[in-house]
Length: 78
Length: 139
Image 1 (spheres, rainbow over the protein chains, first blue to last red):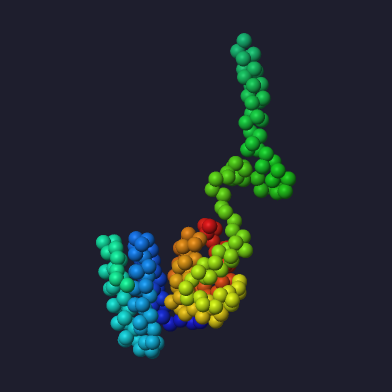
Image 2: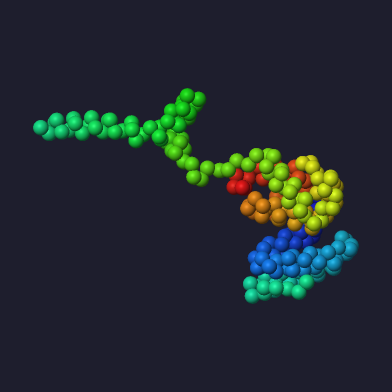
């Protein structure tokens, strides 16, 4: 399956998020994982030709990742 | 007087030498039967090196561990379709996000890190098994 550059960016961000989840304390890891999952799943219906929306969501996702990656954040509400 | 002492110490050295060399020399002697031309200093030391020898994973073991991991993955609903040749999307109904999670779980299972580019190319159990088998530091 050939993927566009944008699709690869989305998957790469998802992978980064999943890697970041591993750094969190074991007991709250699931909360972070489901937070990241729903963050992506909520927008699964976005048309793949809708580049500006996807790019906006990517930017938003990257910023969120940056914020939540902080080791000071140890838990997140589900 | 001096010559006698020299001769005696030389004789002792000859007698002592084979005793301490045998454990090292034995594997080399054995392998020299098969490939007499490839004896190099590096091969000499391989006979006594046992701590950091790489663990050879068998294909069955790798496949079994990956299948167990998929069995426990909550997004795989129909485990009856799970075989050594299953395709993540076509057989198991996983989408691209799930595939990323599966590949990450495989990373954790075998304690390796798969670069993005290679991770993107893994779409089936078989591809994952082949990839792991090709990694020398997977265990």
